[in-house]
Length: 320
Picture 1 (cartoon, rainbow, N blue to C red):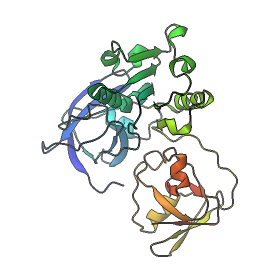
Picture 2: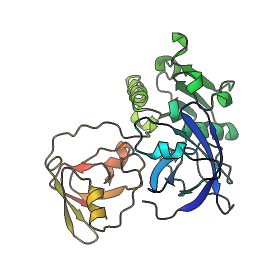
Picture 3: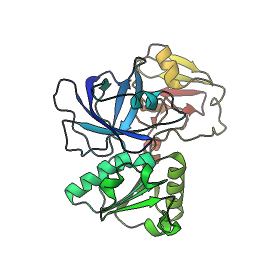
């Protein structure tokens, strides 16, 4: 969990759609906020229960006095969206410095695919590419215009195409047409609900796009199915390189749960394998990766998310 929190205040709030509220946040002391790159998100601590949730920054990244976030009201909320939607102008909250594992990569052309609330990090990317003269096109999918946050900002933009489920079939997203085959120097960015992301990433792979050109950010963990492997379901042992201490990780607890229960200082934030705050390195053993944040290259380099991933080997040694 972030150990550096800054007191902030809601300086403006409005309903972008019947389900999406937009908040403008500023430091309570009036000082400037941190710099950030498009694609970044912040931890927000809210309510008496001090709930911590992550929200993408969707304002122009060169604005230091205020941050803009958008929050979707979820019927199945674990408490975060309900608490956020209850906030009004003037209400206090706490935020931590931005983190970014979904930034723009060096590319000749950028193709941005947003579904629903997934527009938030991609909006900041589009704003930055507009400011820097970068080549891009944004495809924004929503159930209807009334459910598309920021539609008024985007509908007349020459490098944005809006796709609404309740309109003519020919304007729906067609990745064979709208994405096409891989183009040298092009990068694809995908963000949105799980079904949208699975479709977009799967279709892109079918069209021949290499994994190295596909960049994604999920707002919730995707369903994972454990592959059979020794120690995974029935438990395994974690060994820490710093002390040599060993801890049993039972089948119903995560590595992170066990570390925290034993007083081990370990960074974390989302607890779902989607933010990257808890990443550590594996020294030995065979990890069972169950995250949605690490690339294949990072996994091959030995990186590991203790909040969600497990082990196929009886002992997993971590640099912690």
